[in-house]
Image 1 (tube, rainbow, N blue to C red):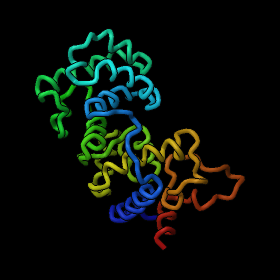
Image 2 (image 1 turned 45 degrees about the vertical axis):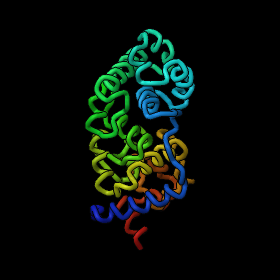
Image 3 (image 1 turned 180 degrees about the vertical axis):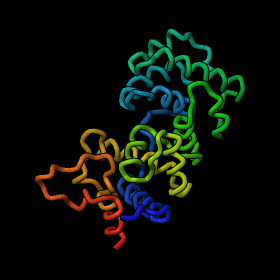
Length: 241
């Protein structure tokens, strides 16, 4: 059976984008924030931590230190105490304060609005930069690739990238730039609600007809194999008919 062509993958990706757009029309980051710098801080805190936990910590943090200048000049130990429950709090406090100091010193106290400058901030890689640019400024410089987006991109057969950067590159090649912000947010929401890591709810998934289920264990041999368990090429051909 032949492999899916890039043209076919783009077409399927377009259908996935439309279905997710209907399911999550107002998709945005779940991280609570009031300003771009607060979104930057919240995103740094979200590393290896749930958004729910971050949102329990940030109200007190932002009440005490609302601006970049406040965090830049704060006592590091006080920051650590406020964010301790997010894990890796010492490294996160160092990154947050370092980023805010550079924002104050090099960018006039304002969060940079382009990828190149954002990546110069301590603790900021492409994922964080994409979250800030997309959700803070409405700028589509790339696609947010967190654990959910990484997992779903492989399961959906949209990428076989070995790291987040490769997955982002693959997604950017098959999805129009105007959809980059939305697809990242919507894949995250779909990953949390339906396409979960351990027990994906394939039977109720809105993408069932478009998904090859790569990496998901098939049903037992004693049961009839359903259409959702056919090989990728067979399922794609069936969908195209």
